[in-house]
Length: 375
Image: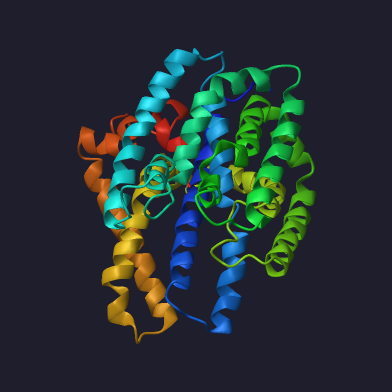
């Protein structure tokens, strides 16, 4: 069988990225719902399991980042050229939006922690930790490329799994100390060791894509029960652990195992959706996933400040609907406005998307940064 072209191989990644993008927006809306002050046990009983079972989305973006980078670099990348091109394109929107969120959330100034937090994406809303961490992956990708194409690729993958599990377990379950060293716990999300396994999994997946898809299809009947068992294990771990709702996010060892278990099922679902009419809108959504990632927490925060107080007497369902509508509508409007200019496109990470021809806008080369960074 002839290996699929890069664009054909990217079809599943596009659909999976679109699914993850929608899921991440929902996660953040639900997390904001917890800030509404609801203590109704019936409400929490419904929100918490959904929140936990949706935590595959952010790690999946890390997997897709490694997948797309490996797919678009079939030959060894020149370290200097690669870093200059990727880091420059990624730093501009990251730095811009780090300053925007720092201004909107009015963080304290004049401390070392503040400036380190700004660099690591922790100041303000805090979701930019993922972009800061992907920048670190860009810096080491030339060496990762050599590792995953060498004879010891599987050894590197196992080593990265142990590193990620140990790193996440330590910062998740070791009590947060007092004083300046507590910043390490706050910034642990932003550092590459906690995510390295996902990136290597994606790079190896791109390199051995055909063999992996063949095995996934051959054992199709196993992935549903495996995903269900992993979901039950994740929920058990969450309800047994001492972590609160705001602490029990995607940077936990149990989420690593859960993500690995559900990825085969999600990948097969994306393969199926890629052959339907959903591929066209999914491809557009995927190509703008980085911009959506940058902007939607701002729209969510503005809705929490200016719309939700007017609905304090409304039902939780109505408040959730308003919150979701303001977040999605505001994000779509800002992305549309930004895509109209070259400067706006660059500040949103859309320069490689909005200026490309429609038929190539979401191929691996056209999607560029948007396909490699979001969550």
